[in-house]
Image (cartoon, rainbow, N blue to C red):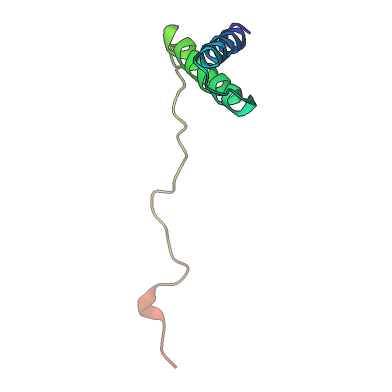
Length: 80
């Protein structure tokens, strides 16, 4: 919630600054500034906390046959 409030406040302040400078400020500018500020605030919030350690899991070992035996030896087959 704090990120959304910071983005709305920043977009509003930038809108007032744009209005004071004489440049027209419309809803598209407000939305772009709001999105960009929210993205920056979210990124800062993600990198400002300490990363959680990964959970330790044992590896999964699948059983495999040691040798594959064929049904009939190749030398015993005769060509027609």
